[in-house]
Length: 70
Image 1 (cartoon, rainbow, N blue to C red):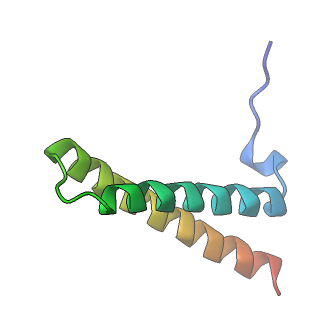
Image 2: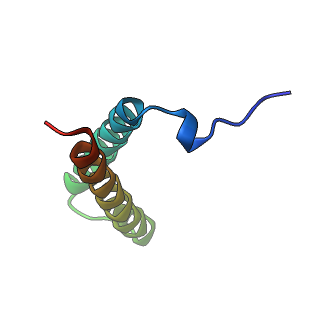
């Protein structure tokens, strides 16, 4: 049986790396969409959702960095 990994089981450093990776991936996709002259309604919705997810990842990065210190 596959065990679920709890957030408390993951080190803050690993969570930081994961958040950085997610933030980069979201940024890449947003830039891809931004290069288009026109976005379909579906792409506009995707861009909006990606921006929200990217902001959440950035907030998580800020929180984790403050917990880990300099």
